[in-house]
Length: 448
Image 1 (cartoon, rainbow, N blue to C red):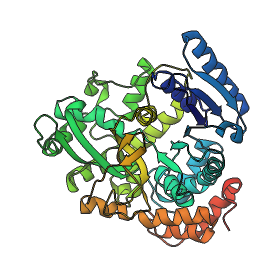
Image 2: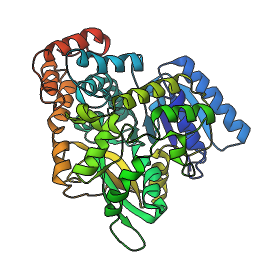
Image 3: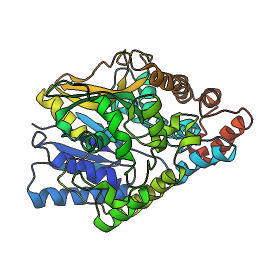
């Protein structure tokens, strides 16, 4: 079966090489043509050469082409996988994080939530909307998968601007459950039926059952998780382990022997577990971005250690193609092509009453059933009121972020900051916005 799969942002070593490896291991996708697109001709050419050499060496039934011209890349596309950033990723990210802090805003990370998440959104959503406009003109039938952050703000804005576009947000954070729950509960992950949901990087396990008996597994999670996370390795220990072994710990590794620390980067996580009775699927650097009291609770050193490790890891990554399955987008594409009817654990799609406590227009992270007709969200009904309250605090922020980008409105951007629960002051907020527009004028100068 010949399909055309377009990778936008393919010049990225992490995204390009990794996604190509995911595609090439697929039997369902054999015969497909992979189109690589990036605005950097040098990195794009390198990925193309390596991909073609790998295909030839392993005699794989795939073909590859590359172009810096987006209109060419999109011709005949069936599936589009996009992962883009603009400018110097870490320099801009550090401005998103540190400038609001300089003015007194206590944000723990600054990538997806808080003012940092707003500036990241204002910077990256306009080029994504341009890409989507081209898709609607050239290949409106294509299914588009987005890996860029801030995921929920990007997807909410895109679905508002292009409601007919099949646009799905993908994130790997749900994979933490496959690592943690078997260790906590002492059963294989396949023996569990787990449902998680919320907003991207702000999701919790909502239900868990043992498949064989139908018994509720949540009481066991709440009873056993605290002891498990008391023995988790710190980021420094993980960094050392990765440098020595070249890999992350696997299910077979004893995490405590790597270098344990009590609740590393999981102190907000611990509050949610104990006070809300829910287990987050991610750690403080993500979950804590959306909660004003997180700054008082979180493991700040753990977050800084993670950021340092992540930055060093990407700077020294050895790009290569491997026949492996990393992200979940390829099984979803396979599921559409084979009419699989399986349930994918987490996608980011328009709510449409999938989470009854949230408005229909916001994009939520929920499970979804995959078949020949596409991706169908699984209804989670009413979620616990305490968690729903935390999520509702983001509704106006997402609404105003979308308005600011679509209408190029500086006023809406300022309001998005003033309604954000992370911002607990008035003085200096307008100056933060002016400062960021000045520092990032190339990307934020459109706000009027």
